[in-house]
Length: 172
Image (cartoon, rainbow, N blue to C red; front, top):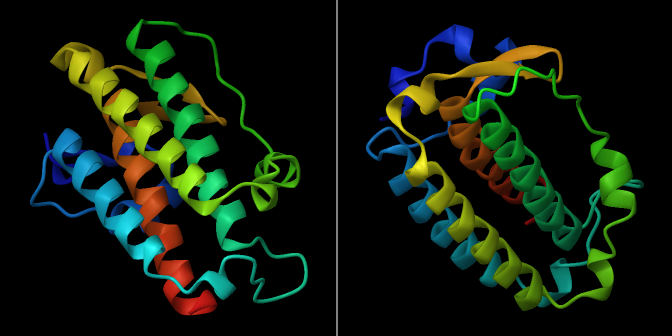
């Protein structure tokens, strides 16, 4: 399954701006693997003095953003698990600023954070590989919008790709 197979009723309208950054030459699980390696290599090439940089007052550092990517991936994967299991409970949104303000990323080493990202992604690739075609197509409500399990998988990588773009534009 590739991102072009998603229909617009499988995700919130604002997600389209994220999903256009997904490489359509890969299947979902292939892209999950390729994109995390691409991201880790990209981050490892960022000069050390940039890791604590904020391009404006109140903006997150590179390490805080990576932790935000990890937190968001965990939340999206949890949503996918619940929806795949036919849980009809509407799933709430989350306050990304509260998560970022309480993640303690600045007191961790970059390699430690990147290792956590790689391990979270490995677990989530296995999770998405375990879903049947029927489960991947299931939809549920998250943050007030309908979303499919497979769209959540692509949104994990699209969100990461979005922040990689932000790094290039505002941090480097």
